[in-house]
Length: 516
Ligand SMILES: Cc1cc2nc3c(=O)[nH]c(=O)nc-3n(C[C@H](O)[C@H](O)[C@H](O)COP(=O)(O)OP(=O)(O)OC[C@H]3O[C@@H](n4cnc5c(N)ncnc54)[C@H](O)[C@@H]3O)c2cc1C
Image (cartoon, rainbow, N blue to C red; front, side, top):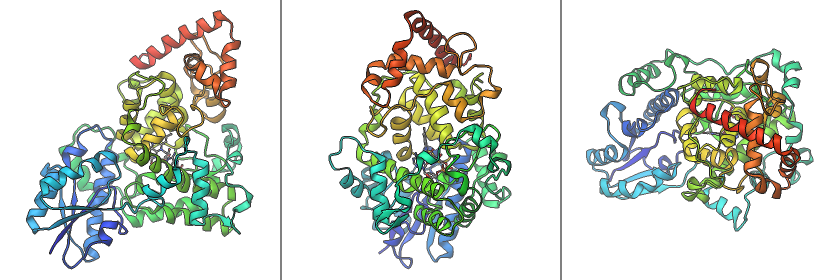
């Protein structure tokens, strides 16, 4: 009796639950490169190159480990269902084994796969998260608001991470208040004078080269350039990448995690999400490595805790929210946002807003940018403009090497756009030019003045921030965390309010049509 073990492209780990349930002696492994799936949006080519190269390298890893592995390559042009049905026929499999897909749409397609393949499809629980979907649902219970901080404390206790005698190390769960250095502090710091980008990878690797040629041939015109590819594609390279971060950047992660610097796209971020999200790195190993570095005295508690909070807290939490709230969550649009995506983000136009143009260029080059660029530049722009949540989600999914629905819904729909009405964030993350000037180095080269609300040189973020406050005044006034902003709007006289709203209409139109 042979079973077909379908390994999905985001599940490239030897701890994949479907492999654990299979038998090397009798079962066959199948990896499918689905051209219809990959080609359905305009994915950044680094995302495609990363996943395909990592799949081909994982196939080699499994063969070396004694598995019989088949690969359905891109050039066959088959979709998942056809390729799996063909694989079942070819080896006479009586069952398909696979791990639960990481996205809702793929999960919903499984019954169709079963019908076409003509054999049962057994779905094994996802082993790539520390908190299972069921455990999250139990934790969430009937809570009206799902607060990350509460979930994170529960995860710290459950997994015994940074705990001392049953209490959080140092006496606090979060050192976030210590981790809010400004751009000026970053500029003065010794950290900035020792730039430490992630290590270079071997771009001449033959598997990567073959994948790049396939992309040129079969998926022409994707955004991004082959020569800019910069990510590891194997587990061994990914482990080195993680070790490099722990040694060189983790100590500075905490204090400078909220800063954005036009001269340093990485700052002290780990740049591991693209690897974690396809199984090349294991989240618990990353967490334990950071904890060990702190216990060895190499990394301050605030930095280790800050990094661990992202992984054990945020990453697990957004996955939990996703599976608890989907599919309805993707339909949420609580602020009634219907504007299209600004063309400066798709490369169809350039913008005079220095921060937006810089971040768009970084994304175009690396298919990645760090959290604060995503939240406070890109997400903030979309929030203030009222960008339609589905268009925003699609853009993040296509353009980021780590962009997957499970992680974007809560981050984009919830955190950045507040389209869930505050299910996960206590307030909309709206900010004007003053915030961007304090936390980023972009304003120095920008023609706009962050202090001005009206006039041709007023920073569009400042103008749009006040316009947003006016549009959602009643909602903001009721929330203690945003009531001050609502009062700020009330303090402007009627002429000032009219001038701001008129300028906001011009600015929004300019950004949306690509003329500003
Ligand atoms: C609008 C928006 C869109 C985002 N889209 C994605 C996305 O498509 N894919 C994605 O993986 N992350 C996304 N994030 C979360 C976060 O910004 C990225 O995980 C992070 O920037 C990746 O870079 P890094 O690996 O250097 O992370 P670091 O800053 O070094 O953090 C370490 C790790 O913590 C995890 N993490 C940190 N913050 C979050 C978070 N808010 N949600 C989930 N995990 C988190 C990631 O796995 C990350 O690799 C998004 C955030 C926002 C605000």
